[in-house]
Length: 88
Image (cartoon, rainbow, N blue to C red; front, side, top):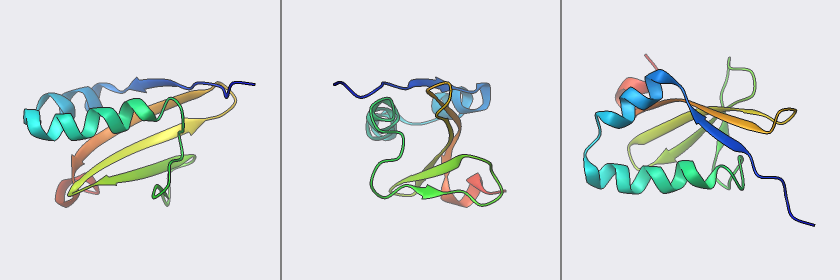
C-alpha cells in the first residue's frame, strides 16, 4: 500500500520569502519543501510552540515553518527566513 501524499502549499508571505533568496540557497531549500509531500514530519523537524500543528525544519541558518493538517492531507509552509529574522 502506498503512503498518502500531502499537498504542499505556500502562503503568500512564504512565496515572497522564497522570492528574496539567492539561487544557491533556493537550491538547498526547495527540495526540502518538496519532500514534505512524502513525509511532513522528517527526521530533525521540531514542533513549534504556540502554533497549532506547527513544525520547523532547520536548513543551515534558514528556517522553514509550516503546519500539517492530517485530516485534509495538506502541508502549509508559512515562512522561510533566516534564523535571526524568522521568530520576530
